[in-house]
Amino acid sequence: MSELTGQWIQTGHFRTYYHDVGQGDPVVFIHGSGPGVSAQANWARILPPMSERFRALALDIVGFGQTERPAGMVPRLAEWVDHVVAFLDALDIPRAHLVGNSMGGGVALNLAARFPERVNKMVLMGSMGIPFPLTDGLAKVWGYRGTSLDEMREVMLTFAYDKGLINDDLVALRYRRSLEPVSKASYEAMFDFPLERHIAGMSTPEELIRRIDVPTLLIHGRDDQVIPPENSWRLMGLLPRADVHMFSRCGHWTQIERESDFIAVVRQFLEGSGR
Image 1 (cartoon, rainbow, N blue to C red):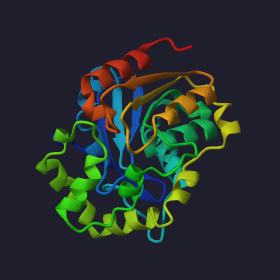
Image 2 (cartoon, rainbow, N blue to C red):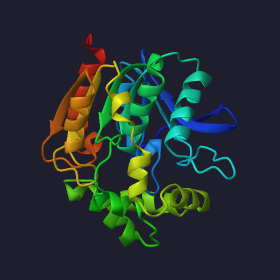
Image 3 (tube, rainbow, N blue to C red):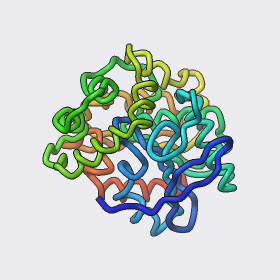
Image 4 (tube, rainbow, N blue to C red):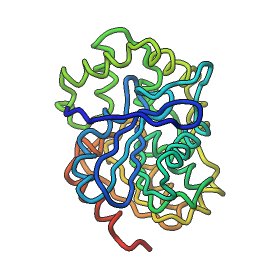
């Protein structure tokens, strides 16, 4: 996995670590959850090609990666949305496209409901944001308290349809990051038991979703074992300006398993006139 160059910016009372490449209309990429996750882990293969046509930005949302975590803070949906808005403010970006992966999709959806004036278009990938039964895959991800490479490998295998993508280097990288004391403590605090309550906590009320007048592309892997593909169909029924693109033979990692197709679909959507 190629390393992205990162930098820091002050966002309110803590510093945010982020990546910023390219020129053009700003697109903010919001990563998902999982032990050892970061913007780098989710978007390293996506930002460089997207930067050919857009200003591609990806931040470590508070509680993850290298972004500072204020003492005593256990961030959840409201704090993550406020963090992304503060990030836009710090960079003097009045409006942006949002691309949210999994939990990051739930953040983008709630941001569009609360701050519609800040969003041009929105891409939600294998997205949270509405209630659904806890899947075995998500229970493995959020319930991870592992202390071995094998346990990390077992979690990561839930993300991909093509299990061959889960190589030793990728497992080792995520495992090392998950063991960092601040990262480990933060993750276990954010996703404490019972896990089901965090699905509700990541959800935006349906009446607010129905009011979101933002062109939206819903992307999902047909074989997703973490977030049910039915979520995207349900969101399409709630969002008045939503389209759905379903990838076959693909799990939760659409941006990795179908990288070139994902980039093409997202570019076409963001560059289109919208409806």
